[in-house]
Image 1 (spheres, rainbow, N blue to C red):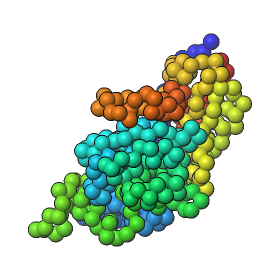
Image 2: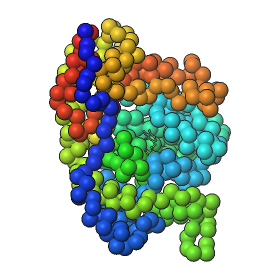
Image 3: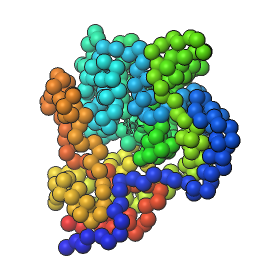
Length: 373
Ligand SMILES: *Cc1c(COP(=O)(O)O)cnc(C)c1O
């Protein structure tokens, strides 16, 4: 028998927030300068600080990950068809529809839950112009195999790296693969600026083009070179990002400890599989996904409900699949038989709460709810 928790509910994540008083001096500077947006001093500083921290050459800040994804497609003039994963947050495929691009869904690898490189080639047609993989849960894609396919067929690669802040694979930052990588700094992500995002690219010329696109296409006062958008991050968000960055290593260490605790405690639980990355030298512990398999006493949704009834708001990321939403489900690649692995995983997954402030007592409570049935 379980009892309803009296304590406040625990959500799958809780945003990292530094002490408010530490933010006041930044606000004072903005009030003094009256420079609120349009590549202000905090915006410039945060771009440099993130390039340093992440180990990337060029980075352009945005208002959100979604606007950054949409702009990334514009920057490379992607059209026609793009191969992508159904197992992601819906913004991945939406960024294609917003550009009039047709998503072509390809199934995922059963171990990493990332786009399965072995299934990409069969989905390529004369209309294919790019591949849009996701480093799901911050676990790196098989970037070598994806690049080989892209090179052979003359395709661009844009990584949705919304989960992959700070992640390094054997070759260094995972963000240095492909033509562009897109980050999200939404409140729910490992590193947040309330709302925000970025495009990572390799050279100054591409960064300049992206900077034009995010500012209506303006090059100077009288020259507009493209039908750009307003994707600029404000000084408030950028200043907050600079303050966040100071605490990010500690925050990731705390996530790491929670990850280790869950992993150890759940290792012996029959029917519970804890996902792991296969290629991380440095991980970010953004999520703690488990698969509730056939030999677990409860169905996934029953466990989800049980957690919920006990004040634990775990989430079924990613269920439903993107390809099951109304604007996608009529597409040929969305058919049931094309995506067997993604379908199965979407029926089994639960992401357990993981965030720096999660207390050990709450962690133990979650473990015991999962472990004892
Ligand atoms: C969060 C997320 C996005 C969207 O980012 P926003 O900053 O919320 O617009 C895109 N893709 C994935 C995989 C995400 O998790």
